[in-house]
Amino acid sequence: MPTMPSLAPTPAQLAWQRDGLGVFFHAGVNTFAGREWSDGSLPPEIFDPSDLDAEEWVVLAAELGARYVVLTAKHHDGFCLWPTSTTDYSVSSSPWRGGDGDLVAEVAAACRRHGLGLGLYLSPWDRHAPEYEDPVAYDALYLAQLRELCTDYGELYELWFDGAGSAGREYDWDAIGALIAELQPGAMVFNMGPATIRWVGNEDGLASDPVRYVTTSADLNNYDDEVLTTAEPRYLPPECDVSLRDGWFWQEGEEPKSLPHLLAIHDRSIGLGANLLLNIPPDRRGRIDPADAARVRELAAALRDRFGETREGALVADGDRIEVDLGQEIEIEHLELVERLEEGQRITAHRVLAEDGTVLAAGGSIGVRRIHRLPAPVRTSHLRLETEGEGAVIEAVRVHRPSSAPAPDLTGARRAPTTPPSL
Image 1 (cartoon, one colour):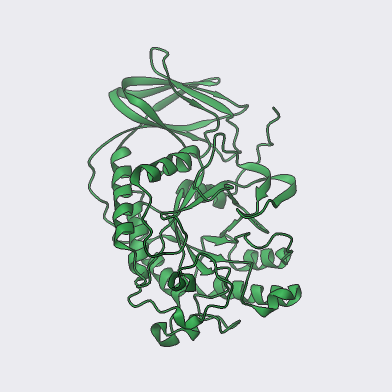
Image 2: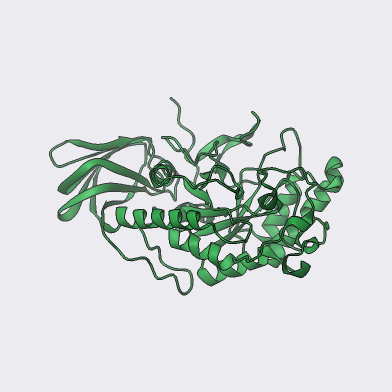
């Protein structure tokens, strides 16, 4: 089977991949109407969280180990969570904060306080704006909205362009790309237009082996068969998005996914070398539902325990084989492999063997990280890693065993990871 050209990431792409974990916040009029999607006709007056606390949202994301958050600044209904000059369908027309609120600003400030990157979701599809029926008029409106978000809230980590509802629609991506290049050149761009990252292709949070970073196509959305294609291969690493609950917006009566389900999602996204964006939807108070917060903290504790003690092996390369010296015999439950990606992704297959030649783990790609959970703990002082792929370089091999590490101190500026870089 032919392999894709080994195109290299930009420094910003590679930094995004290494960060690995983000948290999505879906909030808006849908929260108050019991809807997942609405058609732009819900009155702005229903947006009235009684006790909104963006600090709580961001602190919980930090407790989980997230490096960035993404807020739905405007969903498909067109309701804007900032006081935009482009429409009165926004928080300015709601009773929240007396009409003087700016949720984007509150989340941005909390991200700065806790050292998380700020991402903003701005739906291209707008079911409220009458201008949407006139592509030229709507392109001007959309560019004005994007300019406000790219200008008024500091450095942006990611811009999320959801493809839902946009099948067959052409937007002025040249102008959008130029605006981003002017105002937020370091921001990752999700899936459409001048994309630098792509959607994994499902809303279950699951990648599959191999995870390839170079592609000529990307799925537009989960609701039709349209696929975006490019003439030349591009380095577009995937992001896996999934909600903690069944729906994206908070709904009465829904429960969070089980801890085993969330750990399986982690293994099939971050563990395969993709990024994970986990949605935690605020409730109608503007707070995190207590059951959701408890489950997120369970997940954080489970990951701290799973990857609590880490040892990095000393590597001696011999062609496609690498000897890994762990320094002493230890019991391990997880293996983490890291490929050098500055020159591009090259590894197509790999396996890890114990000293006696027993195969402990095997798979396809490695990429920014590949985590193997062993069927049973193994005691060893040496490992052997065999790879396939011309010019492949292994940057690190880490082994993990559980520990009862305390919860991290989240005070201060952007912190060092409280778990290995894979989380």
